[in-house]
Amino acid sequence: MTIEDLRSRVQRDIDAGVLPSAQVALAKDGELLLFETFGDADNDTRYIIFSATKAIVAGAAWILIGEGALDPDKRVAEYIPEFGTNDKDVITVEQVMLHTSGFPRAPLGPPDWADRDKRLAAFSKWRLNWEPGTAFEYHPTSAYWVLAELIERTGGMDYREFINTRINEPLGLKLGVGVPKDQQQNIAEIQNTGEAPSPDELEKAIGIRELPLGEVTPEALLGFNDPDARAVGVPGGGGITNAANLALYYQALLHNPDKIWDPGVLADVTGRVRNTFPDPMMGVPANRALGVVVAGDDGKASARGFGKTQSPRTFGHNGAGGQLAWADPDSGISLAYLTNGMDQNMIREWKRGVAIGSLAASALD
Image 1: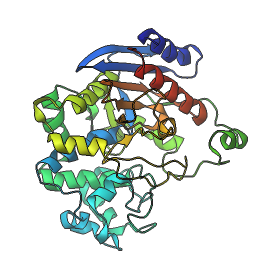
Image 2: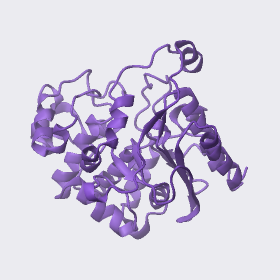
Image 3: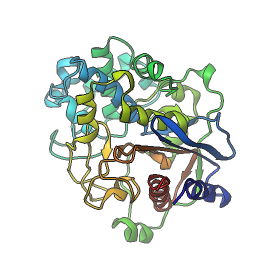
Image 4: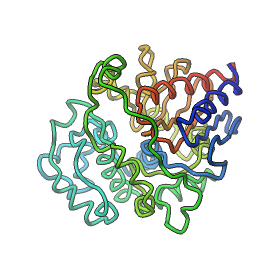
């Protein structure tokens, strides 16, 4: 397989009218091998990367862990006393980052999420759905609002400023987490495309007839077209960047230039699986390290959003709508694939991600 095969696969969905635009970047040895945009956009276009944002925010936390300012084993309430209500005082930082903390659907949305005092007030009201540390359920935004506050309490500055000064500036990257309204040019508008699969199609593909209801709805994703939502910098899903910057961020995680991260910490947080609880939707072990997903060697990597040709050590974090972002420590390759087309056919979206991931991982073979 070649880079041209990867390009052709990305182009296919544009030609078929399934997606309005897409952008792909492939990198190795700290350099881009491919950066191209397809459809109604160009290389200056930025995309909302949804939950791929989590690996960037986690990267900020990893810096603080390496400096000894943030301890994953400590309870969140030791850093954020306002959080320790309603039996949440037992939750650890690690559980927050592993999505085992027990408040996956805790409510916090616009406009309150733009106000720190209102975020803290929401923390104090949240209640548990289950005992922390006993199960895995993906926390789309709630856990990462807590992680953002942990970064602020231990890093001494706004979490968005911390990402800019400690990650973007030293790496020469533009990973937008909180983009001011006057700097929102060239951001691709989110568009819903396609039709949702039927219950029969869902059951055949993943064994369930109905997707569990949650906050990641088509309406919620379209909400990130709002300039106010883009300006907030939702730490669990509001990142804005292009594929080149995202692929190069993962190169930085592989090569750690200027030792931005403590090397031992970086190896641990991206390589040691700490959460093997079953994913309630996919039925496979979650395989989560501290802020990223690890492909694993059990043959289930594609159910975790990876391709079929990466090494088991591949780590990354995808995003809603089919955003892909990962790095393979064995091959040295990193991939970022972004689109503004929210394909309502999640089976087709999943197959697309597996195909693109597989082609990217073997593009240099």
